[in-house]
Image (cartoon, rainbow, N blue to C red; front, side):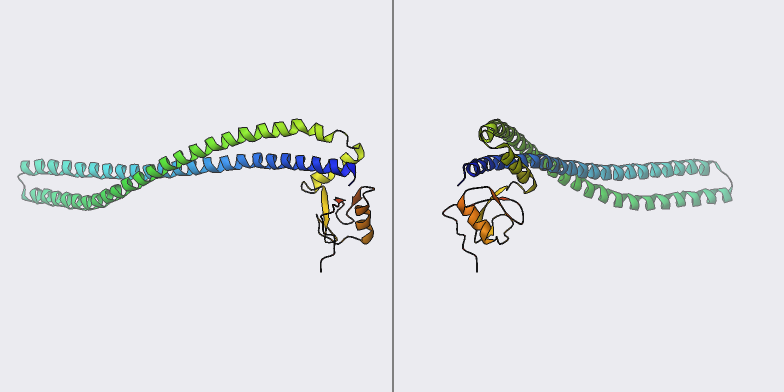
Length: 242
């Protein structure tokens, strides 16, 4: 195997570690956002439940005030009724008092329904509170883990990047430039082996002359289809697949 190929393979292995570490680091942000979104959703659900309960309690208070207003009217009509000496006025006040009592009865029926809604809303608030607490505990733990992992990956990446010049040294500038261009454009696989008479990158069958040139280890050989740099070792099966 050509000396430059050996050096490029070592560099590629190192660069793939860098790439993998960078990809893992880039995935932490979305994971953190997803975790925080989950916690926010639970908090919002709790707020919705609390607001629903407040609405029901406000409605109950409004109904109680309506009842008090009707009762005050009854007391007013009763006082006026006691003071009147006219039969027609007495009957009118009696009718107004009865109407108020009927209205109070109707309001009380509505109030019973609202009280049932309040009970159900309290249950929902309890469930939402428990869910929010559980999600917060889970998310806090996950965020702590992500922060620890992020710090570890950043250190690993810094160490890998610091060591890279050691692997770059001694590689021909032209070969290095070609390698770095391919590594960037081919998903971190600039050099690939020859397997079953095909390129290990694009899997296209290779011409016989390309295979022989690759076995000769005299020059850098590239795939005629994807332009990746090819290499061959004795343990590779270059027999064409059936």
